[in-house]
Amino acid sequence: MRFALKHAALIAACMTAFPAYATNGYFLPGFGMKAMGMGGVGIAAPQDAISAAYNPANLSKVGMRGDIGISVFNPVRSAYVGKASSSGDQSFFGFDTGYESDQEWFLIPEMGFSMPLTEQLSAGIAVVGNGGMNSTYLKNFFDASPNDTGGLGKLGVDMMQLLVPMSVSYKLNEDHAVGASVVGAVTRFRAYGLQSFLTISSDPAHVTNNGFDYSYGGGIKLGWLGDFFDDRLNIGLSWTSRMYMTKLDKYRGLFAEQGGFDIPENYGLGIAFKPTKSLTLAADVSRILYSDVKSVGNVGPGLDTGPGFLGVQSGFPCGAPPATANRAQCLGRDGGLGFGWSDQTVYKVGADWQVNDNWTVRAGYNYGATPIKEDQLTFNTLAPATVEHHYSVGFTWKASDTPMEITGAYMYVHNNKQSAINQNIVGGVDIEMSQHVLGVSLGWVLDEGVGLH
Image 1: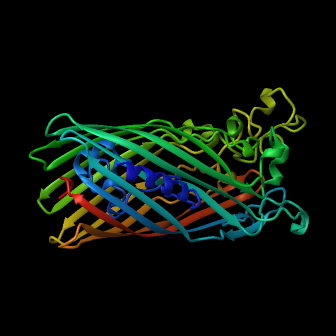
Image 2 (image 1 turned 30 degrees about the vertical axis):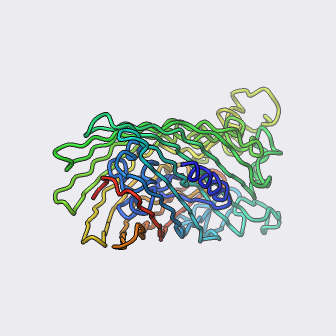
Image 3 (image 1 turned 180 degrees about the vertical axis):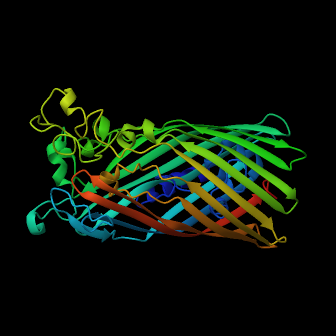
């Protein structure tokens, strides 16, 4: 265990160099290649050491093993504003711009280790990407200068979040287990090309072009896993607290609460049913409380009907105290403009079929309605998290004479477009995204446990 903890810390440090990007809002659709092949199902379907990131009680089922994997993530994002949008609705600045985001290939590593300590007690650690947001537009469509002479440079954001759940599970009896995790978290963020918004910030020096900043914090995760009908039915519950994070000081003039960017509370229910010994059907439903985090949930620039620039009343400089009602929405203040996201409910279903002793195949589907409201597209050009429908397949091959196994998964995320007219500053807006995710992992199984098979 000491060896695993030492190397988990090393991998966690290395992973901060890799951005992670997401599909359920800004959360990843699942943890671990086996779960991803089933649409991200995992709360009641323990299959590997990484499954503790869903539900720490899963450790009671997975035995002693180590898993390490990597995914190639290919998101295709685009934003069109003003006359270039499908509506042709021009703003008072006359924007007529549309671009596909640059940088479309990313790597997402993950790892986990689990082991029984006694007949009742198991422990494990995982290192996973929680998700993130990214966009890189080579031309800045927030540059209102005539003939694009403002020289604001590229426009975009880059945010990733890393989670390190350190978990234990305890078997109450043969059919029920509970688990708990202490979850460490790291956020990395940068923004560039947002000079047009300095006039509505409470701290204009800390809005944009300040390089990467890091935020650290954590929370807890609790879970329960129950077996019923002679292990043919698993039911699991999982709850993750809000992750309280340190401020992103370099961007305290951009995000609400002076650079606050906590990770939202989330919870879920999972069911796994085995109609036959070799077939498992599973489903999860989870809820992500994005609206509770002000930097994400606060209302952003809406319809172009408010006074002044972006609805912040003109004649009241944002940088000058106090925060009167006329300036409450200035960027960086507690009520500062955000992305206006709603809470999101995510539904996942998947199937796992053990073909023989060597091969297992999987398929799954994941749906979460976009959290972006139709009148909140101006800021969300920077984070077009519009996708809703996810389709996945996967496999595992086990060698007959070694403890090794190889798992692969592919997820296709169908393109989804959101459009609106009369958006503040830019007029009409179209944002859209589609994704491909291809991953592989290596498992080292010392004690197979009693997971799905």
